[in-house]
Image (cartoon, rainbow, N blue to C red):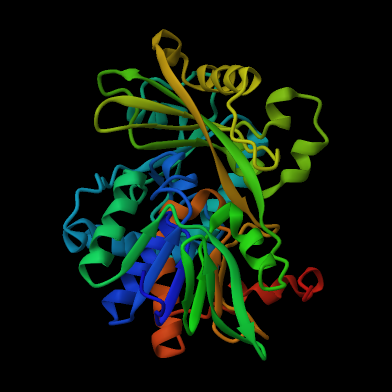
Length: 394
C-alpha cells in the first residue's frame, strides 16, 4: 500500500464515495478507507427516495434542490446505471391540524422555488388510488425522485477509481496523526498513510473517528427499520411519506413522551416501489445505539401504520426486513466543512435520512472548499462549530 496521499477519506458509503468522485474530478490525489465494504452501512440499508418536499425551507431545501439538479445528468456522467427516476412524491395528511401545518410548510417551500402544492383527497386518490378514504389530503411535488442507493455508491466509487482514486476496502482507520494542530496522516489496519487532509465521512460512526483526534461530534445513530414486499404490479406512484413522518424527523422529543408504541418508535409512512416491483415500506426512527437488529415490534408497528394509510398493502407478501443506522444531528442538518483548530480535518456526515438525496451536493461542496476555499452557498450553518458548547477538545 502506498504510504502517502494528498487526501484521505474515511467511509465507503454514498457520502465518502461522492466526495472521492468530486475531488478526483478536480485532480486531487485521494485514498478512501472503508472498514467493511462499499455501501455496507446506511447506504445499503435505506430506501430509494430523493425527496425535496420533506426538507425545511432554508439551507436544507437549497441543498436538496441543488442536488436534484445534479441528479438529472448524474447517471450519464458516472457511466453507471443508478436507476434514477423523476417520479414525483406525496406527503399524506390525516387531520385538519396536520393540514394547517403542511399549508404553512408548503407556502414557505414555494417561496424558495419548490414545485409543491396541497391536494384534496379526491385529487390525491387520482394520483394514488390506493389511499385510505379517511385522509384529508396530501401534498404533491413533481420534483421528488428515486435512485438505487447501492448502485449510486458503486457508481461514485467506480468513477472515482477511473479518475485515479485508491479505494481500500476491509481496511479500518484506527488512529489519526496530528502535530501542532495539523493533520499528519492516518493509522490503518494495513499500515500508516501520511496526508495533508483527512475527511470524516463515516456516517453514524463519525463520532468514533472524531474521538481519534480529540473531538466530540453530536451525531447519534438512529435506527430505521424497512420492510420489503414481493414483486408486484405497479401500485405505488413515486415517493409517499406521511406528515407524521415529518414530525418524527424534526421533533424527536414527541417520541420520547408518548405511550403509543408506534409513536415511541418514530414510525411514519415511507413508501415507494422499485423498478423490479418490490415495495419498500418504512420506517422507524429509534435511538438504540449501534444495534441494527430488526424487531417484531418494529415490523408490527410499521405494517399497522402503512396499511391504515394504504389498505391494499394487506394483500402483499413480505420477503424480508432490514435496518440501517441514520446519523442524526440535533438540528436535523448535516455537518459539512473544515474543523476549526485542526488544520486539514474535514467532516461530511450527519445527514440522517437525507444522505442519498444530498450525496451529490455534499461531494461537490467538500471538493469546492478544498480546491477553491469556497463554494456556491454559505455553509457556515453546516459547520461543526454551531454546536460549540458541546464540542470541546478532549
